[in-house]
Image 1 (tube, rainbow, N blue to C red):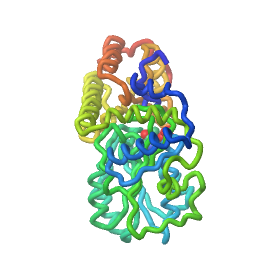
Image 2 (image 1 turned 120 degrees about the horizontal axis):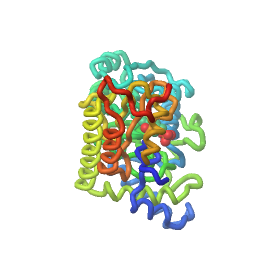
Image 3 (image 1 turned 90 degrees about the vertical axis):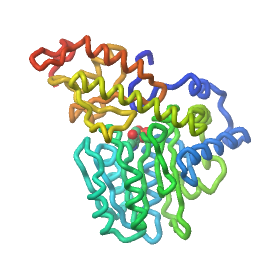
Length: 368
Ligand SMILES: *Cc1c(COP(=O)(O)O)cnc(C)c1O
């Protein structure tokens, strides 16, 4: 890829991670692999405060699949609530339907955060022991939902929180100490290559999972209880992930990483504002690593993405759920620099004038 990558996955890979990806493959039952695997699990637990971590070969969606199937195996069955304010919340609902979970949903319009006053009322209606599941950073809109707020509401009522933390892991402060199940991936804000699905777990004493209902490959209990992987596991993304975790190896490194992400995010949002391209998420709910906005009037998502590609930048907008709403997004995950974004935003400035009475730049005058 010669273009600068401003996609929410794959993300730009640092030289350190790149070196990890070029290490020779290791046998997944060998001692060196086992040490690496267990080291990555414990570093991910330390990073988030989760007691246990399981790794699966797959993308983030697989980690959500594991969460859904684990909820379906709770004995006795427990009811739940799913929060939706974008594409990834919608996907949780369809996964939950597939596993025949018993749940209700609460939806908010795209770009709006969870309304916890609303959620508090809904939690009142659920028996203790129920679960609530939602997306922390809703990547489709760039909204960072209030996970600590949800956790504190749920804890007061004895309700278990499950969260899709796929794009917040490594990109935003993430405290999973009081979260039952959470999903993550190697390939987003942690800045590694994709290919490893991560599940964070805090099992409750006395909690029973009906093992006969857990599909072999997705059996979280078996994955947690065992040292090393249960099935063939490629060491290549794992070595890359271990290298990426170097950026999170101490409190000060984590702070620096998150501060850098926050600064880049603020820069992108404020420059877009100045161009009249207002981010969908309001400033107080905006995630650092993804900014979703509508391209200039008259320009489709695809046309805008193509225009940026012509300028040497890959941005998001080709996914059906963005294109249909005429949205695009700049993601600043992985080894992306504020300077990379500045080059793109400078080009926007010279390319088109956003005064209402001016015609858009010829490259953007493309029918929807
Ligand atoms: C990217 C993403 C997913 C899906 O992850 P894949 O790696 O594409 O399977 C799910 N949820 C959120 C919040 C995401 O950002």
